[in-house]
Amino acid sequence: QVQLEESGGGLVQAGGSLRLSCAASGSIFSINAMGWYRQAPGKQREFVATFPSDAPTDYADSVKGRFTISRDTAKNTVYLQMNSLKPEDTAVYYCNAVVRLTTRAIVPVWGQGTQVTISS
Picture 1: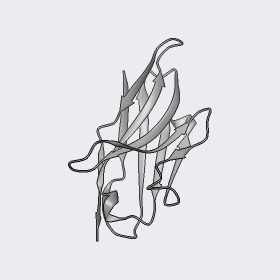
Picture 2: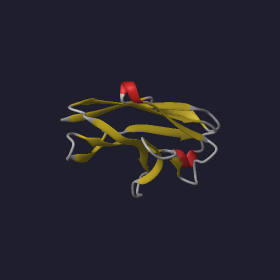
Picture 3: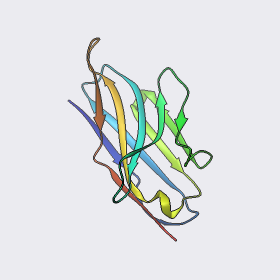
Picture 4: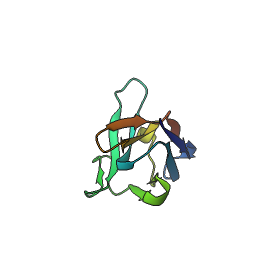
């Protein structure tokens, strides 16, 4: 079984910064990709950023130039540095990992989510 533990959420004023972390643990053969999604109240979960193992990083247009995703492969950890935060960034942020459990089994894993609130 694989678990994702997120940290770093909180309340900041508009224009501020936060850094989210997500560490994967458990029976991991390898991780194909790690990334972040978010879900605002009354809205569907949306893609924020991804860090694949064999492809370039990718970002949602709404966060390009403000958010930076990074990854420590040795620690199975992904980070999301969020700068110039806006009230519309307020959401629960979920970590996602595409985990290879064996040579044949690949599964998506989700974290519990961490609340990010930006005050105007």
